[in-house]
Amino acid sequence: MTKRILVGLAVVVGLVGLVALIGWMLPVGHRATRSALIDAPLTSVFDAVRQVDQYPSWRTGVAAVQVLPDDGRGRRFREDGSNGPIVFRIELSVAPSRFLTRIDDPDQPFGGTWTYELAAEGAGTRLTITEDGEVYNPIFRFLSRYVFSQTATTEQYLADAQKHLTPR
Image (cartoon, rainbow, N blue to C red; front, top):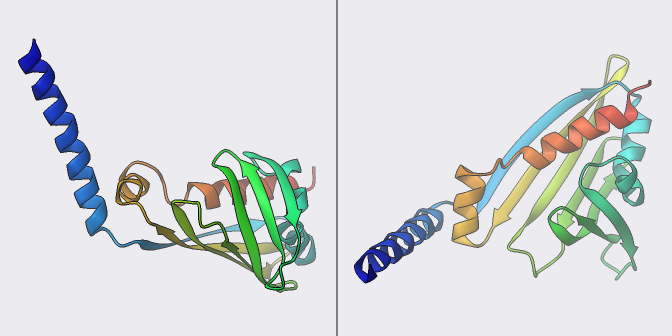
């Protein structure tokens, strides 16, 4: 019985070690871009993107947003959601075509930026989100690459924006 437990423990430790090794060999950074045609005018889509305090009313998984005091380096906000609280900084806001946020939270095992690019397309708006992400922990890096989708959050954002902004 003791031998089985030791063998089982060795297998678990070996698998965790293998996952960590593979994760360590993966690049820290990744880039993922997703795009959707939103059936709404350019200014309406840009307003929805930049009004971060309104995210809980339409974004899946966002329970609350608290706008934080400006520390002289730009507007910041804390988003409380399914990944726990995360602080973001708005680094760029060029109405109505470009918006950029950065994770400004050193306590997170990940970081990076989301760049929102908006362009009129027909009667709607093409919203493109590019995530330039970083995953610091090699085990999380392995999981984000092979187990979880690196585009799931951007895809959900686009689906939520479409639902929120499409006339009923």
